[in-house]
Structure formats: structure tokens, C-alpha cells
Length: 282
Image 1 (cartoon, rainbow, N blue to C red):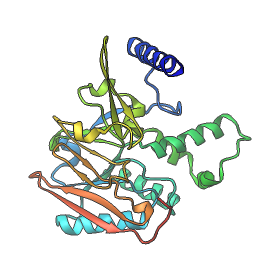
Image 2 (tube, rainbow, N blue to C red):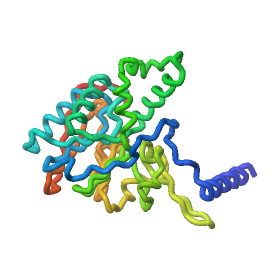
Image 3 (cartoon, one colour):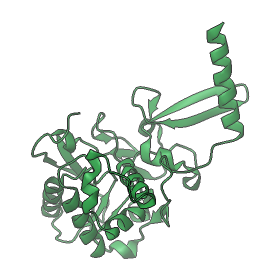
Image 4 (cartoon, one colour):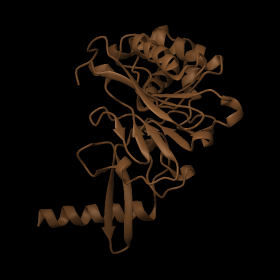
């Protein structure tokens, strides 16, 4: 009887959500960027090759090594770097990483999207802004050294970057198939890993889920038209799929930092550097 009651309540909850979708807000209620979905046009990049980089997590030394190796491989000193989010947090050099990111961005050499760890940082920043007595948790103490300009840089990061020149969409976590970009949920763009499909008498539905062991990997279901580059999934590591490429290879956990170079003729080559040590247990 209890099981029947539980299933009935679950069905009613799903039906209600289907009729009245919840508001599309970020997970922690942090401010939306001024431009949630940004387009990088061909004029901004010129003839430079792209380097799309996986989750850095403040592993700044490895990030710099990857950029150097990508330039050598591409045969260009000036490349356009795109980061898939989670550039900061948990790793060893947050201050150095944010400065390097901002310097590259100021030179017109870098763009990035907001990841779930950037959202966590913004949550702490907003808490401290609202309450001057708020004490940052130990793992966020490094934020005391961040400037207002650092936080402003993070606040302006979009959720997606569309790059028509290479028919690419860059997002931190994932996108739900067959849903217009403007209607994608911000929590999915920054947190999802899998899709959960539901079938009911009133119709079918699909929703994102952050767990790897519930549902099916969203990237395996993505069929374009754009090729999606994403991170956020170190457990699955590099995913080289027909219409999606996952680039989180677990540098934070002592594995590798991975990127993909895309030149003007759309040729792709993966590039990786080894982590210098294990910074955090998996």
C-alpha cells in the first residue's frame, strides 16, 4: 500500500511539473549573466585556431603548459582559447588562475562559460556581499584575496558560447536534445550529466540529472546540428562522440588536462598534459 501511495504521489508531482514547469533560475539563485548565450563571430577570432580546454580547477601550471603545447602543435603563437567552465575551485592556484584568465580575456585571446564551481563561488560572493559578517567556509577562504574585478569577470561568464565558424556549442555540463537553446534550463547547462526519460498517459518528458548512474549520458543522445564541447564529467573522462566531445579528464585528480585544437579547415587534434600531482581525491 505504501509503495502504491508513493508511486501515485510521484506521478502527481511529475504531472504538476509537466503542466507548470518550475522557473528557470540558476541552482543557487545567483545573478544571471548579462548575456546567458553568447555568440563568438568569425571577426572576433580571425584566422586563429581554437583551443577548447576541459575543466582546469585552478591547476594553473598545467593550464599554461597546455596552452604552450597547443601553440607548438598548431604552429601558431596566437590562438583563441575557450574554456568549458570549472576553471576555479578545489585546485591549488585560484588567484593565479583567475589572473591568467582575465589577462588572456583582456587581450582578446580567451572566452569561457560558467560552470557549477563558478556558480558556487558566486554563491559565496553573494552571501558575503549581503552579510558583511558572513564567514567564508574553509574551502573558500581564497576568495578573500579576489578583487571586485575578479568577481565581475565571473558574473559576466555566459552559460553557452556558440561558435558558428566551427559549428560548435560550448557548455559546461550539457544540453537537453530537441530543446531550443533559449529554453534550456540553467541548472542543466551547469550541472547535468544524464537524461531521464519518462513516459505517461499525458505524454513523454525528458529532464536532466546530475548523477552518472541515473538515466543515460546526455551526450550519447545528442545528434546535432551543432557539435557540443563540454566538461563536468571526469568519471567518464574524454568522450569523443559523433556530435559531442567531453573534455574533463580529471587533472584535479592527478590525471590529465585535455583540450582540442581546431584549425581553420576544421581539423581537430586532441592535446593533453599530465597533472603534476593529485590535488584532490576522486
